[in-house]
Amino acid sequence: MKEFGGIKGSHNKFIKLKAQTSGIYDCLNNMMIDFQIAPYQTSEKELAYKNIKNTLKLFKNNEIILIFDRGYPSIELFNYLKEKNIKFIFRIKKDSYKEKTKQTQTNDEYIELKTKTKEKLKLRLVKIPLKNEKSYLITNLRKKEAKYNEINKLYKQRWEIEKSFEVLKNKLYLENISGYTKIAVQQDYHSQILTQNIIQDIKNKANQILKEKQKQKNRKNKIQKTLKKKKEKQKKVNLNHLIGYFRKNILKIYQNKNSKEKYKKLEEIINLTLKSYTYETPNRHFKRIKKRTTPKNKTNIRRNS
Image 1 (tube, helix red, strand yellow):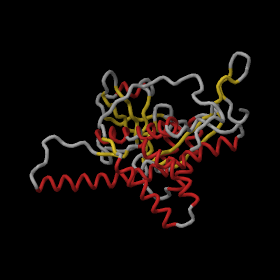
Image 2 (tube, helix red, strand yellow; image 1 turned 90 degrees about the vertical axis):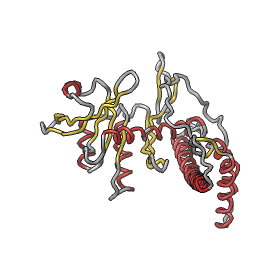
Image 3 (spheres, rainbow, N blue to C red; image 1 turned 90 degrees about the horizontal axis):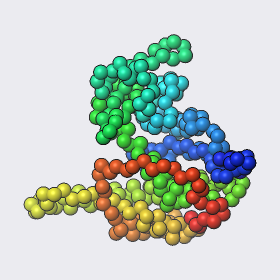
Image 4 (cartoon, rainbow, N blue to C red; image 1 turned 180 degrees about the horizontal axis):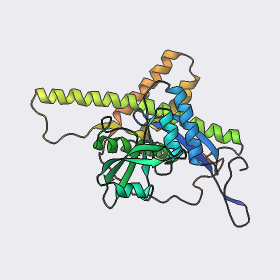
C-alpha cells in the first residue's frame, strides 16, 4: 500500500490499491521486451523512458520502430527518440498541435514543430479516415521509407500489446497478487510476464507448424485441382487451451533435470495444442470499454499459476 499507493477516498484512506505499469512489446514476435511497475502516481512517460533505455541495451545496433498511443506525444520525447536514431509513430489527439494540423491540406504532409531551443522539428503528419472521425499519426518515417498505407498498417500492430495485457489480466490474472510487500508484488508481476513470454514462444512455434501444414494442403489441392473457390480461414492456436496445458505441465518441466525429457514434454504440449486450434478472424473491431472503478481481484486469493 505504502510502496505503490492508489486512489484515496474522502477520509484520505485508500479505496483502491493500484500501481502504474508500462511495457515495450515486440509486436512481430509477441514478446514483452521490458516491463516496469512503479507507484500509481508515476507518469507513464517517465516509465516509457525507462522502457526505451532498457530496450536499447538489448537492441544496440538493430533498427526499431516504436509505436505509441495518444497519452505519450511530446516535443521532448520526439527529440529524445530522434537523438537516439529511433524511428517512431505516435497517435495524437485531434486537438494536439492544432495550428499545424489545420494548415495541412492532404492526409500525408510534413509539418514543423517548435522546440524549446527554437529549432524546428520536421515530422510527418498522417491522417487516417475512420468511421466517424480521423486518426492523427505523427512519425519521423519519411515517405520513401514507408508509404501512406504502410504507416497505418504499422500503427495497427500496436494492437498486439493490448491483446497481450488482456491475456495477462484475464487469463494469467496479473493483478491478482499473492502478498502485501513490494517484493511480493514485483515477483507476481514479473513471473506472469515471464510465463506469458514462454507461452507465446510455444504459441509461435505451434502457429508456424499450422501455417506450414496449411500451405502443404493448399499445394496438394492445387495439384489435384480441388482448391475451393472460397479461401479457407487460417488456423491458429487456441490460447486458452495452451495456457491450460502449460499450467498442468510447468512443474513437471521445471523439476525434471533431464534436458531431453524437458524438450519431450514441451513437444507434447505443442502436439496437444496443434489438435485444439481455432480460426483467425481478420479485420476485427472492438468498442472501447470504460475502465472499471472497483478492484477486480482480492489480494492473496488467487489461482496457483
